[in-house]
Length: 57
Image (cartoon, rainbow, N blue to C red; front, side, top):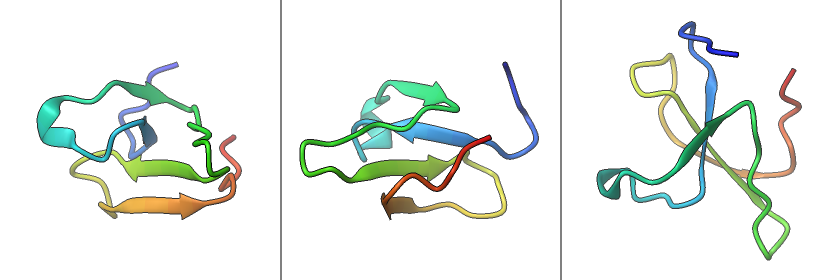
């Protein structure tokens, strides 16, 4: 279940500097119904995705 080829890392807290808990292949549902997903550091894209489930395989 480990993907080093750019995978999605779920971050419950956008504060990466605090070492937030991360889960691979999972989506965190916020109370507002939004999911926050961040691309693995060093990947093709680095940012926070806010919205519905992107459709993780």
